[in-house]
Image 1 (cartoon, rainbow, N blue to C red):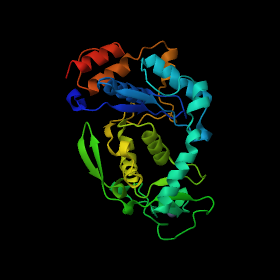
Image 2 (tube, helix red, strand yellow):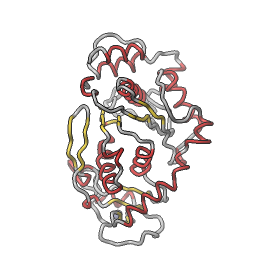
Image 3 (cartoon, rainbow, N blue to C red):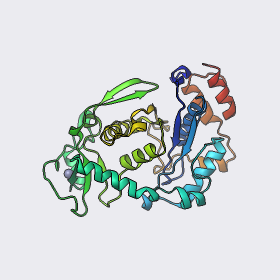
Image 4 (cartoon, protein in one colour):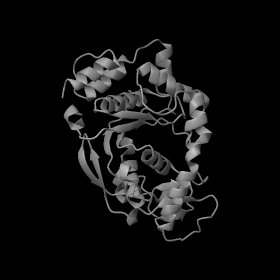
Length: 308
Ligand SMILES: [Zn+2]
């Protein structure tokens, strides 16, 4: 449970909403948006930025970008900076305008000998991946191959062994000390198609946007760990001082993580059925230990504030 007291901090929180327009948003996305909004708005001087992650151009569709704006309006989630419409996003806020910054960071990491080239196919990685508690962690097959960085159709990975453990301040779980080698292994930082990977784009964006408060699902905890390791090598002061909330994921009836690709109940369908976001507000309220019925986002903010 998240206590409002944990939000008391001497500095203003600056957070972000960071949806990816690769499908229609679901209740899990809405939960994360409302929770991020609530915590940021409860902090004196807190500000919220909207960032839309569109680097993976193949999966992006215009209707999914529209869905983001329609969802935020439906939820009553306002923000202080970022795109105001799909057109504004395309013109001024696409991640494509930062490709140069991402590439420069990859070069900096490469020059520090922190990266290596990986030729493994998805199948090879699957076959050699650690099992059990370390399931899904790359075992470092290519770490010593010294493949050239201009080798085509290869990914670039971060040498997890080159870092010490990350110390994350999580407002729910307290201080966590985790090593990227244990939770994610040698993470991909540049994809086979040459596109900077999520860990890099998200980290660079957070630093440039001066984000110091990151609310994300527990599934992204490994990403926080590796990003903090990268941030230390890059001397990223905003990211290194960031506080986190890694919240549980909403599950559907079959106890499976809600996902866009699985066609879980979309918010678009809820809007088309003239449903209100009542159930979203209520699940955030319950998460924050508020038992009173909540009908509007303003009531949610009041109820959370009165708990301090
Ligand atoms: Zn490999």
